[in-house]
Amino acid sequence: MAQNTRTVRSFVLRKGRITEAQQRALDEDWFRFGLNLEDGMADFDQVFGRNAPRTLEIGCGMGGATLAMAAAAPEQDFIGVEVHQAGIGALLLGIKKHSLGNLRLYRCDALDVLKQCIADNSLDRVLLFFPDPWHKKRHHKRRIVQAEFAELLRGKLKVGGLFHLASDWQPYAQHMLDVMSAAPGWRNLAADGGFIPRPPERPLTKFEQRGERLGHGIFDLKFIRVD
Image (tube, rainbow, N blue to C red; front, side, top):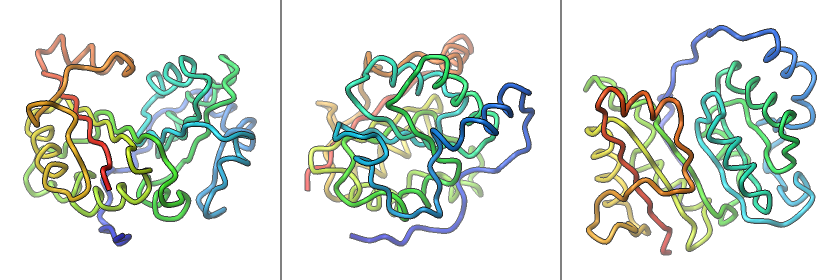
């Protein structure tokens, strides 16, 4: 399957404020829970010490949803990818606080992780919740959900594996629906070929609650790899 994705980044790495506790977690706990791009293709059976269903989450933010999902499903393994230091620090604090042995983290671009660290046909589920919609037309090329991304992701999921997306920006949600519907090898789980109600396994985040208060709609999509 095609492995060449565009080099335009879907994020801007901003220098946000990081707390002392988050920085301390980065300094003290990254070696235990962090995974490094330069280590190449990962053996997750060795990383987690078992063979279990595996979920990759792209863009964990400050980690609230990621931590909740990992705590609720100890029989599954979770791999989070986030570029911002404060988010990684918050995730590390949460892993330690809740004694989570089923969560590991990458601190880099998810496209690089997919291409360099994830074996083909190895993931059971991929999550992409509230990615940057890049509202302006001239920035649409930065949107992570593109045809090349759908093809790259398809190769990493097992047949029958799930891709769950969510957005609070209707134009971007429609863009994601259009891209995934046109991509080969995928099937929309919505009976009408559109969006689905919020699944109970996706935690309600502060970000989402704020969006609902502002009157934003929330749009969920689920696609499975069929071949």
